[in-house]
Image 1 (cartoon, rainbow, N blue to C red):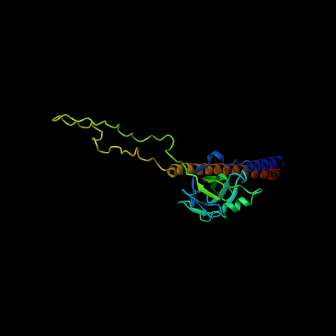
Image 2 (cartoon, rainbow, N blue to C red; image 1 turned 120 degrees about the vertical axis):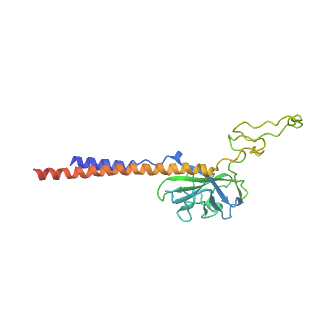
Image 3 (tube, one colour; image 1 turned 90 degrees about the horizontal axis):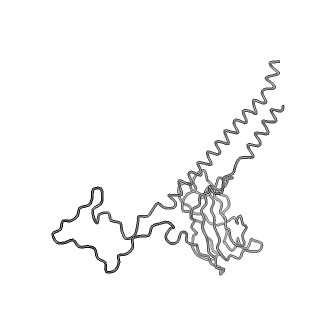
Length: 251
């Protein structure tokens, strides 16, 4: 019976050793708070800037910051109600910030910067996508949503500078032929870049969507590989059980 016990032990180890999703694989997107400013005793909702990409069907909402647990205080319980895989959606907090602060031991001061996280996940799986927002609470009972990406994005090229005062464009001499544009180039004035700078690039949501789909694909590939391994081990287990009976029949 040694082969049987060996196969059973190997199958158990394979089931327990399934690797969890790495934290750096989780894509992060901006989260909106409605209303963007108000009092910590007022109800508020969390508004995503995109959907929860499948296989994520559920969400969990957390608040982190001074006075709250490092892992976060749950403010939206694990649910699939109101969650969309094709569009942005909004979910209310289960209670007010002041109520959640009073539940802590000692009570959270509600002063400083606090982070709200809405995590897209499978019902019992790890986080696959996170929407995040930061609230600034000065300690007077009010809050304000901290702007995301304020100012010009890092690495973007500045728009064209204004013309130097007093400088004028060269004037062609009377009777001089007008220079024609080189083949393959636009004529003067046609399609010239506006003073507003280069055209805007793709939105953050459009850039993040392929990355989230890649993460979801990697999770599906990992589960398929684990399923194949478990199938092979199960077959080995059945063969190990069958061999002693086959030997008895032949003898």
